Length: 203
Image (cartoon, rainbow, N blue to C red):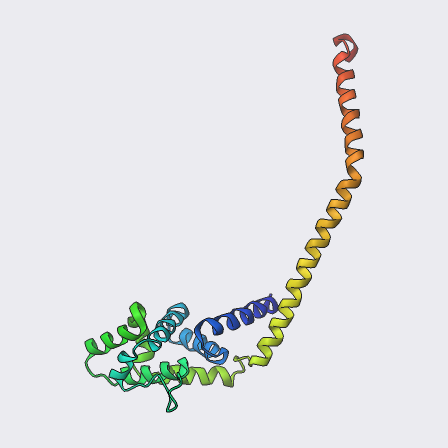
């Protein structure tokens, strides 16, 4: 049902946030915007993950675009800020071939699929993100954590019920074993008795 899907989504969002370094807010807006712009969410996530790896490198592809991967204190900027700045900078490259090459260096093989986001410098993508927030589709971190706690409790209960079921099954099986053995003995005796009957007696 819807509630179960929400639990799964919350769990996935928190896991994905840890994996990508993107906030859960941005991930939810990203999914909404990608859907509206006909960009595969998986492609978008993969592109951002590739971008993050490049951020940890020399930073040269970003420097070419005038995008800084670190702040004034030398700390790594958030992936979402770098993503939006990069998209904006790419949109300003007039030569399409050069733009595609620069996008490829940063986002990898799926860069060409980001055209729907890059073409207008991410304006539509940003607008859809705001729309998702205005519609109440972006769950707060506290809400996601509360949902995950519920999910963890359900998982714990499932594990306890499974263990209890196995224990009950073992108890019943142990109690039934002598009965089954006796029944098996009776069946064997009955079969033996029937085999001893003459054909005339069975007619």
